[in-house]
Image 1 (cartoon, one colour):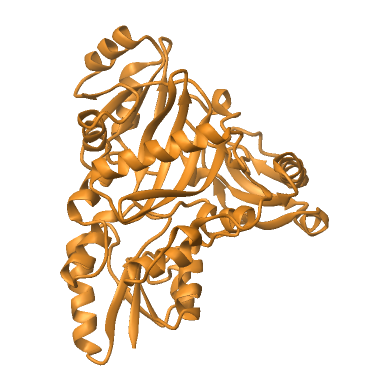
Image 2 (spheres, rainbow, N blue to C red; image 1 turned 30 degrees about the vertical axis):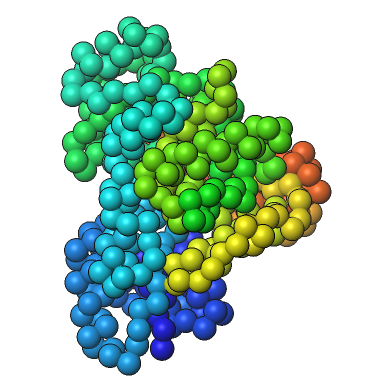
Length: 417
C-alpha cells in the first residue's frame, strides 16, 4: 500500500484523513496524543511529537521497517505550524516538500522578516528586542502602537498590541511566557484592513484560490491581546488589489525559497498597498481550507495539497474558483468561568445557511480568559448568496447561543436549610 503520512491528528486534520482514504492511500497519522481525534479515522497511527522533527522521523522510519510491504507516498499537514517536521520527513524519503531551509524560515518570524527585508518584500517595520528599552526605542521611532510577539508563536499566543498606557514589564513577561526559544520581536502596527490569502505555488508561480476579510471588530474588547473573530468571503477587494496581493505573496514565497507548495498569507492593506505580515507554509486552520474555501469557491485545496505532496501535477485550472458564494465564520466568546449551561444549540438547525458549527466547551468545563485563538469557545460557519447574506446568517446563529457562566468572583448562593 502507498501511505499518506499526516503530521498531526487534531480535529481539523480530519478532512485530510478522509480525503486520503478516498484517494486510495493508506492514511497514517502522527501525534503525541494517543487520543487525538483524527486517529479514529486513520488506518494506522504513530505516536510522536509533531513539533519534534527528529522524533517524528525516527518513529516513521521504525514504522516503515515494521511494514515493509508499504511505501511512503507523501507527507502533509494542515492547521498545524510544523513545517520543519514535514520537510524533515519528506527530505529523508526524497518526497516533494518545500525543503528544510524554507521550512526553518517559515518557523521563525524574525528570520522570515529579515528574508523579506533583504528581498524587498513589503512588510511592516520590525526589530528583534532583548529588553524593554528596545521596545520603547522602537515606539519612539515608529510611534505607538506597536506589536510585541514571540518569534516562534502560533495561534496569536503572546501577540500583544501595545500603546503608551501599557505596563511594559508585564507585557514583556506575558509575551515571553509563550516563547519556547525565549526570543521576542516588535513590529510597527500597520493600519488597514487585514486579509487572509490561501495560495499554492506551482513551479515558481503563485495562484491564490481565496481571499477573506479578517474580522478584528473585537480588537478593543480584548486588547492588548489581538484576537480575530473569524472572517468573510469574498474579501472586499478590487481586481487590482487581488492581483497585488497575489504578486506580493509570490514574491514572499520565492524569497523564502518556496517554489512548490501551499502558502498562507497574513496581509494588511496599508496606505501604500499590501504588506505581508507573515507567510505560513501550510494550509490554514479555522476550517478555512477544509470548509470555508470549498463552500465559497469550489476549490478543494486539501485535495490539491495531497496531490502535490505525493508527486502529482496541479495545474492553474485546478486552482480557479468554480462557484462564487458568500461564506462567513464567527466565534463564541463567553466570559471566563465555569460553564453552567449552553442554551440554543437546537436553534442552529433552523437558521438558513449554517453549514458547520462546533462548541469546544462542555458544561462543567472552565472557559479561560481569552488571550489567544485556542481560547475561543467554538464557531459557526454560514453561507449565503453573497458576503452580506453570509454575515447576517452567521451573526444570527452566534446570537442564538447563550452561555451561562459562573464567573470568578460571583457570589455563591447560600445553601437552603
